[in-house]
Image (cartoon, rainbow, N blue to C red; front, side):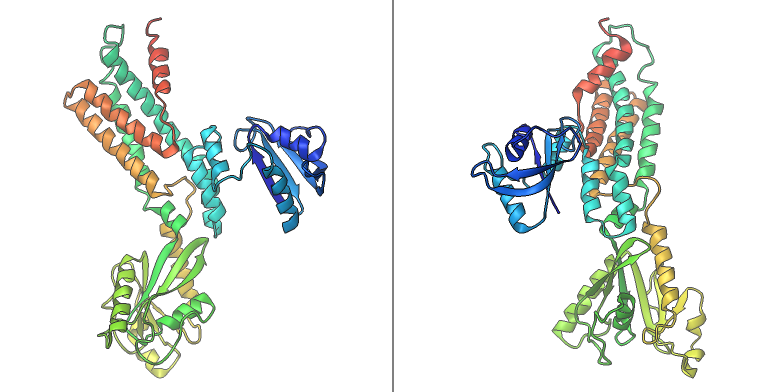
Length: 426
C-alpha cells in the first residue's frame, strides 16, 4: 500500500480527472478506478479521500490516493498527477511547512512531528508525541500571552499618557515580570533532560589496556562488535554500539586502553578516547581483578572490577566488595545484569522521559535564555527608575524571543490588548 497526497487548490480537479466521477464525500474513503486522463489507460483501483480546507493537515484542500504499493502503480499515478499544469513534486518537509504557514502547527509541534518520525525508543516516542500534540507550545504560548499583556500595559503607559489610566500602572508590572521570569528559569533548570533523550546519552568505557573493556562492550551489545585479544592496545579507535536502556537511547563507546603509547596510531587512539571520555554523560571506569586502581574515576562514574571469575585470587581482592564498586565478569556474564540495572536506573534518573514537557532543542533553550535576560533587564530598569520606554523595549525583546520558539510574533495581538483593556478612544 502507498499513499499519494496532493495539497492545494487543484485537488478537486485532479480527483475528478483521475476518477472520471464526482468528488467523494469529505473525509470519507471511496473506492474508485484511477485512469490517466491523457491516454485513458487504467492505473489502479484505489481508495480516494478528500479533505476540504481548512480541515486538513496543511490547511489547504488535500487529496489522498491509497493505491497498491507496486513501483509501476505508484510511478503511473505520480506521472498522471504530475502531468497537470501547476502541479509539482513537494520538496522535503513542504507539507509540514504549509501546515505551519496556515496556522495548523506551531514550530514546536512541527519539530515534535519530525522527532516522532525519527524516534527509536519508547521514551523518545512519548516525548515527541507530547510535543507534537502541543504540550510544549502551550506552555510557551501561555508565557507569551502573559508577557503580551505586560508589554501592552507598558506601551499604554507610554503612548497614551493623556488617557485616563491608573497612576501606578508600571509599578504593578514588577511582580508579574518576576513571576514569569521565575517560571522560565525553573523550566530551564531541567538538567537538559529533553535534549539528552532526543539526542541520546553518551556512555564511555575507560580504563587501562587488557581490563576487558571490549569484552564488556560485546557483552552489553549482545554481539561481537569489538575485537578481543590478549594483546595490549588492540582498540585503536573509539568503537560504538547503540543500546536502549529503559526507553532512553544510549551510545556506548569503547575507548583505547590508557597507557604510554608505543606508536603514532595508538597515541591518536588514546587521544580520541580521552576526548570522548571527557565529553561522555556517564563513564564506566574498569580495572581488572587484582590489578590497578580507580585513579581515572571522577565523581558519578561507575567503578567496575572485571575478571571476577570465582577464583581464590578474586575473592581476596577487597575492592570487589567496596560500596559503589560493581564486580563483574565480562567473560562469563556474572554481575552484568546488576550493572545493566544500575546503569538503566542512573540513565532514567538523569535523562528519562518526564511527565511534564521539557526543552528538547538548543533553539528552544537559546530563545528562553534570551527572554530571561531581557526580562531581567526590564525588571532591573523598573526597580531603578529607568525610562519606561527602555523597560518596554526589554519586554518587547523578551516577547520576540518567546515568539521565535513557536514562530509567532504578531504586533496586532499587542494592539488588541491595549485598546481592549483600556478602551482607548472609546
